[in-house]
Amino acid sequence: MTDYDLKREIRKLGMTQKEFAKNIGVAENTVSQWVRGVIDTPRWTIRIVELLHKEKRYEEAKKLFCNN
Image: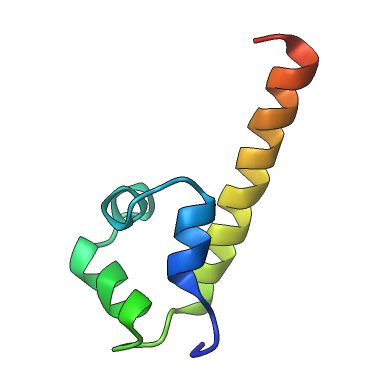
C-alpha cells in the first residue's frame, strides 16, 4: 500500500517506530522500511493500526467516563 502514511499513523498513536515495532512483534528495521517506502506496508499492519486507534479512543473515553 504505497499511499498509506504509516509514519503519520504511528505518530498519531503517540508511539515511536521502535515502540510500534515492539508492539506488533516485528523488527524496528522492518517498520523503518515500511515508513520509507522501501517495501509496501502489509494490509495486516494497516488493520493493526486501525485497531490500535480504536483501543486508544476506548481508553480515552474510559478515562473520561470512569474517572480513572
